[in-house]
Amino acid sequence: MGSLEEIHMPQNGINYSGVMALASAIRHNPELRVLNLNDNTFTKKGSLPMAQALRHLRNIQVINFGDCLVRSEGAVALAAVLREGLPILKELNLSFGEITEAAALVVAQAVADKADMEKLDLNGNCLGEEGCEALREAMENMNKGDVLESLSDDEGDEGDEDDSGNDDDDDDDEDDVSDDCSEENEEGSEIAKENGITTNGNSPVSPNSPAEITSFLSCPSAERLLQLGQLRTHLQQEVDASEPQKAADVILKIGSLYSEDPETKAAVLDTIDAMLKKLLSGSTLQSYCFLSTLLVMMGLLKGEGKTKKALLVPGQLLCLEHAVQQEYFPKHDASLLHIFLSRNGGVLKSCGSARERLSSALERRCQD
Image 1 (tube, rainbow, N blue to C red):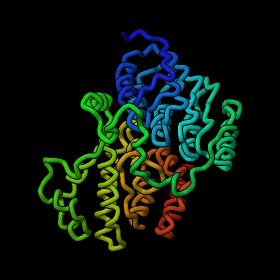
Image 2 (cartoon, rainbow, N blue to C red):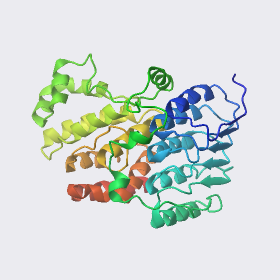
Image 3 (cartoon, helix red, strand yellow):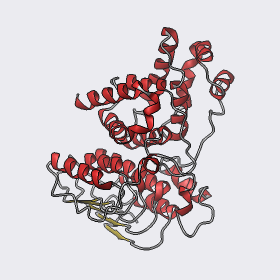
Image 4 (cartoon, rainbow, N blue to C red):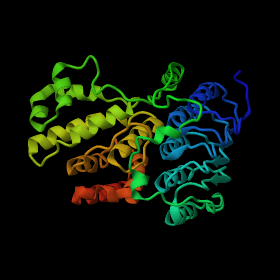
């Protein structure tokens, strides 16, 4: 139609595939002012296409995604859209969405510059007592304390393991009407592609990769990285922001090869710089999707589906320490990392001083 101004579809039992279909239609209705999908079931698979669709709505004033299982990854994606658009938004309801403290703080930061914002509802999520207080303090510091709705029904902190770990069974409750939640149907896949979002896993290498690149990524080592020589430039082609899981996997593989040997260190950091510069050069939503996937693989953010946590070593954190100090690394992306590291950094205790170095670099970058 293209001329809709209000959509009210609460409690319709819409699951992620239906949300994806709605997202495809909503993006063609730029005059939309009110979007109420309360008490349906988004999960990550629906939240990402919906966030992408919201980028096209310059006149939206009320968004009600309460009780929609937006969860933390979805909340981060919506925060990215808040940062770069939705200029006259007045109300945002993300209540009862299984959102954790760190993700809620990212949302709070995203509304800082919204002059028309009147109501932010994050009640009934998983913040915990300390998280609720941190959220209130953050809103007060931005002179938006009166915007935040009551947090009286907060469901409490999920705990370190549940808050930052992965659960392969998370998809089991994505909807009640599909027996095959682990795979998108053909229609859903096409909708995801239309919206520029990849929601399932990808092959580890591109089909047209040089044989040396394919071989290296299947079994990476510092020696083999150096042997690639000029072919290292092809590694940049192996990452794309539309394939965040694949991109994060490659970044962590390269970062694990970091050492203080000058030649190896230079090769690793040059490769990481080239890849991250490409990944973070697109929209805020694309970079947030990549970074949230990276956070899931690092164990700093609870993810959905089959994304596995990586075996972390200090070198990966030292690569990030270097990266966040570079001009190509946006300040708001550094802020995202800083929030999750400061709230869930205990899971990186095995990385010792590298964790502290990354934390210090992020803090400095956020204060620039």
